[in-house]
Length: 90
Image (cartoon, rainbow, N blue to C red; front, side, top):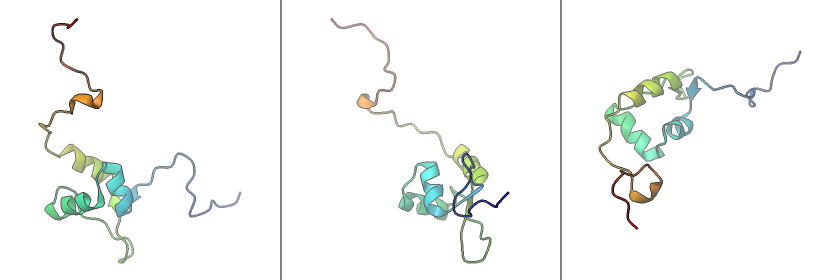
C-alpha cells in the first residue's frame, strides 16, 4: 500500500486546522471581516505549528460561532424565507 499524496486529502476528510482563507470561508466571512473578528477577540487567535504558519482549529471556530451574539436583523423580503401568515389577498 502506497502513501497518499500529501497535497491531495482523501475524499471526505475534513481538516482539523484551516488556513486563514479557508477559516474565513468556513465561517462565511470576508477576509477583512475575519481579520477584524480575530483582532476583537470574536474569533480565537491561530495556532502556529511551525512558527511561520497560522492555522485556526475547526472545533474552536465552531465554538466561536456559537458564542456570536444573535442577530436582530430580519431577512429581506425577497430571500425566500418564510413570510408571516396574514389575510389572503385576492
